[in-house]
Every structure is written in C-alpha cells, then in structure tokens.
Image (cartoon, rainbow, N blue to C red; front, side, top):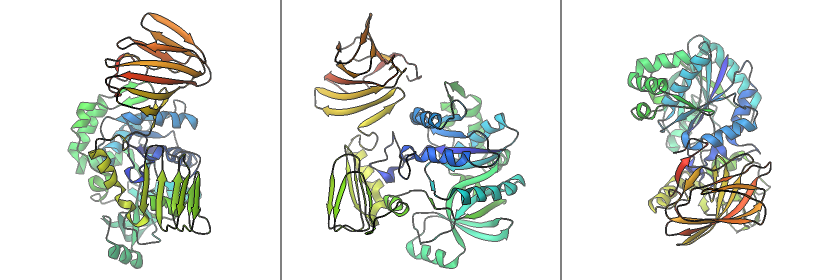
Amino acid sequence: MLIPIILSGGSGTRLWPLSREAFPKQFLSLVSEQSLLGDTLRRASLLKEVGAPMIVSNEEHRFVVAAIAQQLGYQGGVDILLEPFGRNTAPAIAIAAMQALIRYDDPILLVLPSDHVIQEGAAFAEAVAAACPLAEAGNMVTFGITPDSPQTGYGYIRKGQACEAGFDIAGFVEKPSLDKAEAYLASGEYLWNSGMFVFRAQCYLDALARYQPNMLAQCQAAFANRKNDMDFIRIDRDAFFLCPSDSIDYAVMEKVETAKVIPLSAGWSDIGSWSALWEINPRDDRGNVIKGDVIVEQVENSYIHSEGRLVAVLGLHDCIIVETDDAVLAASKDCVQDVKKLVEKVKAGKREEHRFHRKVHRPWGTYEGIAISDRFQVKRITVNPGCKLSLQKHHHRAEHWVIVRGTANVTRGDEQLLLTEDQSTYIPLGVIHRLENPGVIPLELIEVQTGSYLGEDDIVRMEDHYGRS
C-alpha cells in the first residue's frame, strides 16, 4: 500500500504579495483552476495501489486544508495532522509515519510538498512505480529532477553508482553559485533536489532513531499525547516545542547508506520565485504571461498579474508586476529571489500585509476590509451556510450589522433575532453576541465597527464550534 504524505506547512514568502502567511501559495490557483494543494492531492490519487492521503499542516491553516480536501471528495477520509510549531520536514514526516503505522502494516510513504507543479502526470507515476520496489527492499528513495538550465535557486544531488531504476546518492549540494551550477549542468552528474521521497514508514523512523534520537523521542512524546479535534489530529504542544528543527535531507538522507535517487523529467517546478512561475505558464508572442485586467505596450518577457484593478504597463522588459487589493510588487526578474527581503521590511514596519490579505479566511467563511480609520472600520463578512461565529464579546468596540444577502440568526445578549436582507442590528460594546447562517445560501453583511481599539485580538470567546481559544 502506498500512502501519500502531503507537507503543507510552508509560508511561500517568495511569491508575496499573492502568498501570505495566513494564506500561502499552496492554497492559491497559480497554474490551474485548482489550488496547488488540490493539484497535489489529485495527482497522488491517480497512482496505483494508493491509499487515503495524510496531510501535515500547521494549526492556523487547518480549516483551509480541510475545505480543499472536502472539495476533492475526501469527506472525513484524510488524516490531517496539526503541528503546533514549524519544525521543518524531518519531524513532520516522523509524526506522519507514526500515524501511518497505526492505520496500516508498515506502508510505503510517498512524501510530497503541497506546493509543487508536475505537468506530466504519467512520467511522475512511472517514477513512483520505479521507486516502490527500491523502498520495499529497505532503501530511502528521492527523486532528482533532470536539469535543463544552471539554476542557483535549487539544491543539487550528485549521482553515484547506477542501480536498478536509478543511482546511489554520492552527495547533496546546497544552492550553488552560477559558475558551479553551469559546471553541474555540463557534467551531467547532478540532478535538482526535488524534496519528494519514497520509503517505508518504519524504515524512516529507524533512520531517525540512529541519526536523530532526540528528535525521534520528542516526536514520539508529542504523538503519544495527540488529541482528536473534529477532523484533525493535534500533536502535543509541549513535547513538540522541544523537538529539534531540521530538514529530512540534513537529518537523514545525507547520512543514511541506503539513499537512492531516481531521475525525473515531468515538467516539475517548486515555484520558488515569480520567474519560475513565468517559466511554466503559457506566454504570448512577446514572451509575456498576463493574468487579469492588464494592458501592455512594448513589453517583453514579463509576468504581469492583476487581482482586480487595471494594470497598464509600457516599455518594460524582464519584469514582474503583481497587483493585489492592498499591495503591488514591481521587480526585475533577476531580483525575484530577494522578495523575502521586502517581506522582512514589511514585518519590520509592523504592518500586516505580510500576514493577511484584505480578504481573510476563517472556518465559517471570510471577512474583507473595506475602509479603516482611527475610530471606525468597515468590513464585508460572508458566513457559509450552516456555519456560525463564536459566542463572543469585545472590550473596545461596538458593531453595526446590515444584512445584504441571506438570513442571519443573531444572538445579542438575551435576545435572539432573525434578520433578512436590508435589516440591521447594533451590538453595543461588551454585549455577548453571535452571528449564524441558518440558511442554504451564503450570508453576506456589512459590519461597521466603532471604538477606541479595532484589532482582531479584541475578541473574548465564551464558546466556539471550531475549538479556538
């Protein structure tokens, strides 16, 4: 039995401003109508003799992950393991392996990042099929992407002696300089490190016991004290906090003697930068990738993306322009690996654009900022059918709600109100309240907040259907 393990804990800062900490790139539809996570799940489901996938996510993204899985038909059929802290890939895979051993008799695990693109599914499936016999024999297998250019943004794997279906691994190399990358490409001895793996669950845990015993012990303690929460498996915070942070490459693959690599040519990309996204998308006759409401004149070899407003570009070459409702990125394609530096400046300025979009996803729906000032804020709120917000109060703000679509069941102190379109209510400061959508269509309303402090942390929850504190 082959069990896909999908790692969905990344923040994707190099694709800012589309990718944000609260809604990173694996949840975006960048190359198809489906999200990258959805594409990964669908691709894994088409493999032979494959079982239900497991997804390792952080707590903040849990409801988005669950929604994507449900959209693909995994209604309660996928284990979603929640990391309370990011500890890199080695611990994440460890807790997934432990869960897999509970469900199955030492299955083969296929470890996949959630945010990669593979355009040739048949070639990918063929490589996975070739890896499984090696894994059955006790080897730890990774896939090396056959390079077609001297990329400096990828790690490399040096091929060793040829073996059945692949090669021994002679060594791992960090992201090289351009000169070294050109030499690697010319030699034919190197592959790009894909970050995808195939091995038996117990084989991986045995390797951790040998090379990273403290990491394994903390993962075992965290997993032993796990708790089921709705559709999620929560890993113990205290034990996992003490777990060392490391990648599977450093922790295991560079040390284990049974590491193998299978070359893969399948239209792969980790979409690690805006220039990588430009490379894999269809381009017009001047080499441009155009998304959204965009007008160009005398523009070549550029990626231009508009989320809403008209973007007009004149006389530019080899550039990246990305417009969202609260931020615009303009960069040379040669500099896109440094987008993280801009994100760090946004953080240093104590702004929120690195973390949230203007539209923020919540387990019950979304809210979107429309206007804000020192003493008031206006939001558009959408509550999904059958969903409800927490029973809560605020210390610093009052709220006015105007229903524009659907039906709202409102708790206001001791009152229960049923409001429909064009009706409104007022929630005074300090009054306990709740908003619920009892209908079968989305509930939409405009919320006007007034008060001395309008931060999202001014919420005191008395009761919450989604287990939030």
